[in-house]
Amino acid sequence: MVLRILLKSPYRARTGYRLYAGIASILLVLYGLRIQFAFDTPFNETTLSHRYIFVYYMILMAEFVKFVTFIYLCFERLEYTLCQLALQDTLTQLPNRRAFVTQTTQRLEDDTAHALLLADLDNFKSINDVYGHLAGDQVLIAFSQHLQHIAQQVGALCARTGGEEFILLLSGDSVKRVQHIALQLRRQIEACQVRTEQGHIIRFTVSVGVATHRRHQPVTINQLFECADGALYEAKARGRNRIEFALTEHQAAPSSVAPMRATTSVPCEESNTDLPKRYLTRQSLT
Image (cartoon, rainbow, N blue to C red; front, side, top):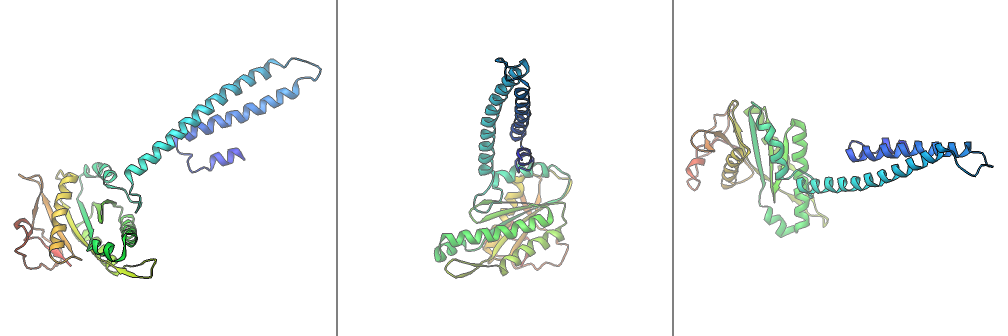
């Protein structure tokens, strides 16, 4: 029964648990030998056999090792919990920005095209003011579930970067595919409804800034993030609940925004003179 519990434990992949399970298994064998040697000793003898004494001291040593291993296991569990808290958003259970940057560093080293989607919930402060912060948390959880579902479908990385802002990294997808994923996210959120504990129905929208990156060009997460942030700024300035696209170029400046030649027919709105000049010529997708 003990071995069955040890083998079926969800923590059996951890190093400390394997060590603890090994020591516990050895102790079971030693206790079995101790019982056997005790029965082999005649009742009329006052001294125990040498084998019994040897196993007895082996048990004492194994018990000490088990105790030390248990302490190590507790510290390993504590370290794992602290790492989870440091790399995971406690509300949405998504990776946080630190975890996202760590995971994307290796992906960006690949010689493939990348796209970074920066999503921000529209008028989120109004939701908190009208319905309360608990309702706002429900909205954040609902959005994170949609985002995580899409990320799992396309094999992307997603995270919550802070507040009502989320991020999604796609690798190896064409511009047309990225457009489809961004539209899918926007339409799912537009149709989403969140019911509060008081019975209120909350509907919300999201604005998305997308930075696309060509193949055979080095790029960093900061460059992609800066470009996507500029596209998100434009989406907010042009009315929200929309998607703005940008193509990163890496020449003189670390990151700049250039017009994107869309592979499909994408409606382009008239330039807004209130926007910075470097954001006026980009294509938009509504």
